[in-house]
Image (cartoon, rainbow, N blue to C red):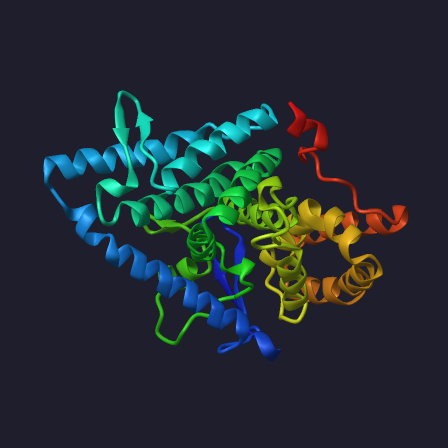
Length: 342
């Protein structure tokens, strides 16, 4: 294991990387999947260059209307009621299905341009991830309505799911799980960026803000995999269900931990999806969590300095409470059956 420590702007040392070992290093299944998704995202952006760079007034107006029609419903996602979420999902589904929708006083459709559907798919995926990145980290309950809309749309439009995963992993590679490694000669700024840090005006993002964003996106992924199968799916399976969460958890525990990041994403993931996973996997999950608290947490502690122990303590206390009660509590803000009747 190799840990590189770099001074951050807040005066603390940041564990820039703990080199991953075993099957999850360079060339591993998560790494290849991550690269595949990032290629897909890059190809999508490239395909949209013509539309985004078009200065024709009619095209610019059309793009503005599509952007508005896709963004406004996402901005209105909340836990007001199940009927409210169904209305929002319905609006986005109609837009993605090629039906003309009214945006303000204008009617718009993805069929108005050859790249219209791709533009809206990309924008909806980007906006949903942005909601988790900027809101969920501090407002944990917000993740559940966002995830509910996401899963329903993913079920109806599989291409959206691929782009959403690509956007999510571009900002939070740890949900791959991929723990990026700096390369020889790489600048400090580039090294931080591949880890998901923002870097502005020559200064790296504050560590607390970085962890808050990573927590929000970890919660988003956890809420997606543990969300109930949409009623509209009939007998079809979840588009990205708990088996993906189980695989993610096992893969993380087979990797060398990173200070702060590893305990943050583990705690965030388990607090959201732990209850549903315990129901699904029973003793198998408890055995895995027992190994986490007895063997893996000490490994996290070894790569952490005193200022970084808060995230480790939070994870340990959460697990201890779960084992004392032999229960992983329902996450605060989860959407109950009663919610969907309203």
